[in-house]
Each structure stands twice: as C-alpha cells, then as structure tokens.
Length: 309
Picture 1 (cartoon, one colour):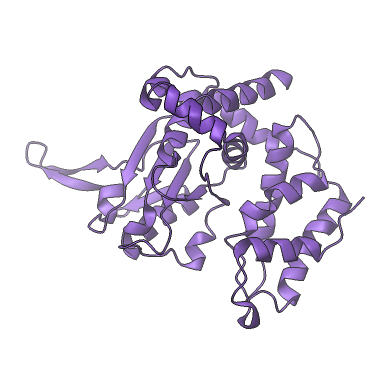
Picture 2 (cartoon, helix red, strand yellow):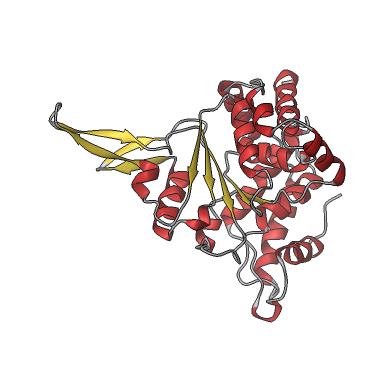
C-alpha cells in the first residue's frame, strides 16, 4: 500500500513542479480523480487551469484531449458521428474527443446548453449513445471543466442540476509572490510539461481508485455527515438543502483525502477540508440571505453542526 501512496505523492510533486505554489489545489484535483468524480475549475483566464489538466494527464500516463467550448460547438463535435463511406457502402462511426481518459472541457460555459448537456450526460453515464448504439467511454474517465466568471461576456451559466454533476469546484487564484517570481525567472511552462515523467500508470490509478471505497468511516463520522445534510435542509439560510448525492460525494471525497494522507480511516478534518469544494456549488442562499457568498454559506453550515471528538 505504501508503494502506491508513494506514487500518488510523486505525481503531486511532479505536477507541483509545473503549477507552482498550488499544492492544495493539486491535491484536491487528485482526490477528485481518486473518488471517480469530475472537477470544475472556476477562475480567470491565464491562471494555469489548462496546464494543470495537461500535467495530470502526463504524470498519470492518461490519454488526453482538450475541447475548446465555443458558442458554435455542436454535440457531435464532442461525441462523434456516423459518417457514410461510399467505398464501404455503410455508415462508419468516427469517435469524437470525448473518447479519452482525461478531458479538458475548456470554458464550458461559452457553449450553448444543448452542447453542455451532451458532455454532462457522458460524464454521468460513462457512455454515449449515438445512432442507437451505446459506446462505453474509456477507464479511467476524468473530466476537468473550466468556467469563466459569469460576468464575462458570452457565457451560458451551468444550471444547478448540471453543476451537481461535478464532485468538486475549485479555484486556482493568483500565485503568491515567491511562486510568481519563480514563474517569471523559470522556463516556459510548455517546456517543463514536455519533460514531465510518468509517475503512475493508468492501472495503478485504477487500483488506487478501488482502495478509496475501502477507507473506513466510523459511525460517529456518518452521524456528522448526516448532521450536515439535515442542517442544510432545515435552515432557512439555504434555498433547498443538500441532496443524498451531495452526501455521497462528500463521503467519497473525504475517503480520497484520507487515502492521500496515508490513512485507512476518515477523520473529521478530512470532511471539513473537502466540504467547501464539494458543497460550495451545491448550496444556494435563501430568500432572506441573498447577499451571502458561497464561502459564507459553507461557513454557516460548518458552524451549525458539532464536530465529533
């Protein structure tokens, strides 16, 4: 087990050599992958979102595809289409870029809702149905979607039901002064990316994903999780509470975070660490609290439920 965890740590360090000063965000991204979820990164352009996705793919030996979402992108441009070939006198399926192990859906909120839905359905089902035939997507299958702030021109905000398909939502933010100085003095990030070694094979990643479900969760921790769910549903601070799917997502993320820290059991600290990125995009303020930010809502939820000791 230690060897597998050493490889996970190696991957985190390798990606961190490219995305400087963002170790926490990198660890959360890896935890999201271990938990078999999908990741939404909401931030300004130029913060390293694309570099993070590409670095993870290289270090994990995953087949990588980047899809640039635009207003004229069609579902077939993502999923693929059956094209008639005259020589064969039949329709032949040409797979789209969705048939890769790690997908970067860049600026997902610049595409129309119909195109967004095509990607999100594939994320949920792990397969696509085209021309009446169901085609499985590769394993592992991990989508990193980036989203520009809603106030930017030409965006189509993701509906709440589609946001819920993402296990985590994170931000990278500006680097600190020291990390930014190293970026300015160092090599081009593309050159660093090109030299990244494979730190873990897809088969080893699949094994690590399988171990997440075996991380022990004690009954008091489950009581704590249920307390968070119940509080979100009963308080008028929120417009609608957390769903059972949100509870399962929180549990999977906490288990993955525990595995990353070489533990076979979940601690309350694991739940509290992943809580903002798992429920932040699932909580919405009630009518009398519309001024509350996502961080305010998560803080209110955390303070409303006693932590088990």
